[in-house]
Length: 504
Image 1 (tube, rainbow, N blue to C red):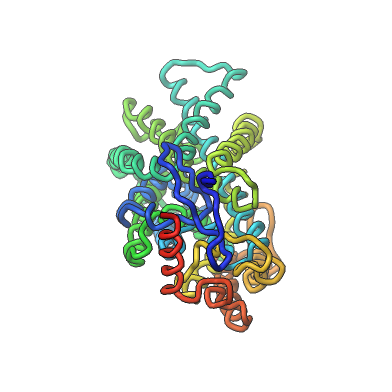
Image 2: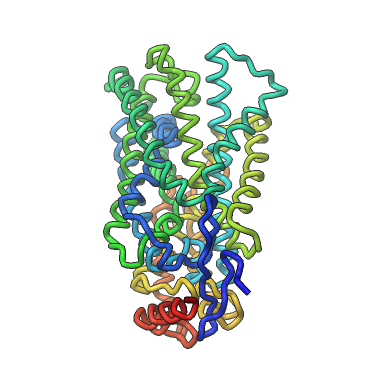
């Protein structure tokens, strides 16, 4: 009997081995292992994937927020530079894709265990993915309604939901088709959006108030604003703990440096440039709702272009976000294909975006609240992932990672790897104690006159604790050397080669 695409059969050591899939316009691979025969592409392709997903309106908004919370221009620029350094971590996480042949949500089973990962890897990833899907849908819907109004097309309030539906369909079509569609479309979207933002930059640079000075703040308020600004900027790269999702199709021998380099550059270049535009624009217009005030610094003909930038940027960002959200949903243990999970998560995001667009009392406030809180979870998670790659020397058996049976190499203790679980809980707990958000102020933040150190200290705490626990927890500290797993890379490749010969 020929297995269906994506099914697995046992290897000699009992670990399920991947089956070849038939060519299809819709990607049939999900969280399973990508065999060597299906690996293709170059590290440079990652640059366009990350560029296309980050040439967007959110960075423009974040830049404006830094001025709105009370920072001066140079302070906002420095905070943006520091927060953008997290793209180095995103590039580092991406090297686990070619090594494992699996997405990040599968790699993280090594850090939390099969069951633990459903909460701390897949669960957290799905929640964060849905959050950004909702934000993108909401922003794009507002921009589309504004564009139609600018063009003289009045949309009655009782039918405005149709605009959201069209945006949702456009957002998720690339995600449904999958990896190849995203990689092929990314250079075109990136180039078009980058050109439009360069033109916007010409107008912003010519109209910016370079003598702008923020209202003086009390010392404790000033420090609180600086740290809040850092958290806002860092929330962008921190939300991309899914770097392996887009590098896993690269050959296993791909240069780690090239993967990390092109991933990081693809994220940091648009983030810095577009955030800078938002910072400077905020010195000349009210950035509370730039879609309505941008006409004050651009000529009339460019207003619809700007709104188009917002719409297309949100759609391209959502294509990548929804792709990862679908993989995270599979990581929960749901027995459904990747594209089905993309559709289900997309529907959930669309319904939530309807509430946020048409029923929520304040979109900007809601977005700021969520950004402040997500950093408390994402910082520790990224730190644990980065430390694990270092400790394991990026040695991941993608086939063993897909074995969910009790007693499997990554089953650990009842399906949980306690070093990762403990480090994540302690890191998140430390972040909550130090957080100073609009909704909640932790006791440590109160003792420090409002200074929020959560985005700085919590990742260090989580990463360091994980390293200590990992190194002192035997025999689980290196599953790649446990009986039932791959003994070393030589044996792993030998197993795969033998299996391919048996298939032939």
